Amino acid sequence: MRGGEKVLEALCEIFPSADIYTHVCDMSAISDVIKTHKIQTTFIGAMPYAKRMYKRYLPLMPMALEQIDLGAYDLVISSESGPAKGIIPTSPAVHVCYCHSPMRYIWNMYNRYYDSSGLMTRLMMPPLAHYLRTWDVATANRVDDFVANSNTVAQRIKSYYRRDAAVIHPPVDTGAFHPVCADELGDYYLMVGELVSYKRPDLTVEAFNRLKAKLVVIGGGEMLEHLKKIAGPTVTIMGSQPFDVLRHHYARCRALIFPGEEDFGIVPVEAMASGRPVIAFGRGGATETVVADKTGTFFATQTIESLIDAVERFERMDFNPAVAVARASEFRKEVFVQKFRRLVEQSTGVGPLALLA
Image 1 (cartoon, rainbow, N blue to C red):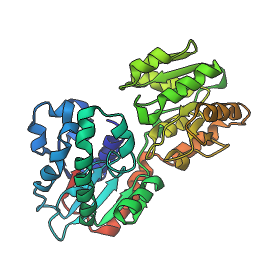
Image 2 (image 1 turned 180 degrees about the vertical axis):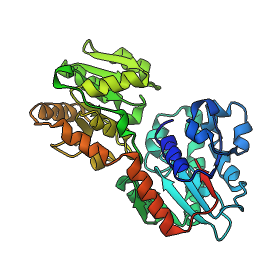
Image 3 (image 1 turned 90 degrees about the vertical axis):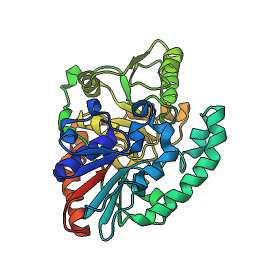
């Protein structure tokens, strides 16, 4: 139940009679709201180890999507950061695509994925990526209306597909987070999220090693053990933690450090909903949520020196927790629901629905 699944959950609440089609579904991992809907998987769901290794079946996904029979539906909503928009709706059905990002691993982050892959993957990536790019661009014509989760993603849609996109930021459960009194605040900075290379957790750890300032890291991922090895005495690597522990640390940190470039980035909004400021890399979705010199500050380059400079500037900044909470409330689920319902009403009358996750 990460960001994409939270969007699907909100769509399920908007359209309670919708059916869901997906490649793979782990019923133990999804919310009760999603479970109330009829869920059908493609043939990939029956492949060996599909729940754990579904990414390995990417070359088969275009074929699987095009085999889905959507003839019974007037409206199809695809929710994707992969190839889900490649389904074939039956004319005259309307297809609205909520795009978290065009496939990162074949477009804007291709070289980063390639460089971090093993030998066999690097041999396969160029021809596979060429095939997927051609198919991905062609299937953009199967979408009637694109919706992007940020202006950053809307620009990618324009660059890769030559299509315009409305922008509706994804829903954030801001009501689950609350600020605490000033005397409860801690003396540590906080980094939260999946510990993978493109999110640059190593940059934050190395910067705080040099600052000799307290940093708490919450999250799991492929870089967890590496970060534990390089962490200095002022850095605490907690790994994955329950929600209550996460919420406790959000509310009591000096500030959240957000060193990666994200499509949108729910974590900074959760920190602001907790009444805490954000120090973020000045590219991507964070630039659309964090307000410079009011709810946080930015650093210009992904270097240790630039991040340290931002932390030192933050220490001189006046910060009002109420301003951060108010800013976060602009991204609450009710706002998403209202905007998305209005967009669908403009596209077509609401009939039987299929949601593609």
